[in-house]
Image (cartoon, rainbow, N blue to C red; front, side):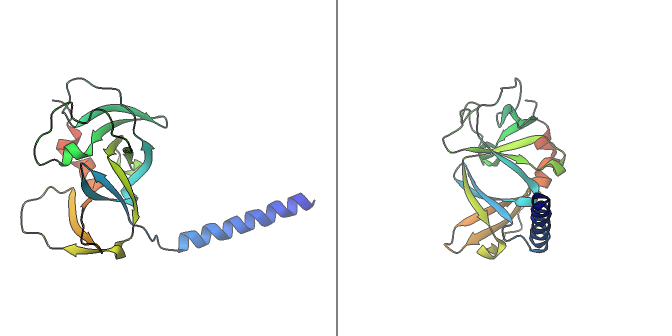
Length: 177
């Protein structure tokens, strides 16, 4: 009988904690990463799980930025080398095929409807919006997945990447070489 009462008390405490957690706004809004030495911010609601980088199964006749397919917790995902995707100039096809030490896969959120992950060179941590100030852009034509450029308190520039717009980009979805 005492066990049943303690289980009920535990369930009640757990329910209270869950309600309190849902009522609190999220302090962090971005996952800060480095891709090819470029600091980027990935929106947390659009990002999925983080996995240690492994060597994905290669796929023939694809664009150089598409590394292959990886099994991420039972979900087959295409893996994109984010540094290569963001590069201003093309990288050789074999550049970065082996994951550098400290690199990770960040799966795109399941709500985006694309089984894909991006390989980042380093995870920097979670960041709140209050840690950044916006920088004005020139009126240049920019891809829709390239969000605002923000600066942190140390003056470093961070590029926001809209993963939802990236997942809908025809160039991102068309991997055939």
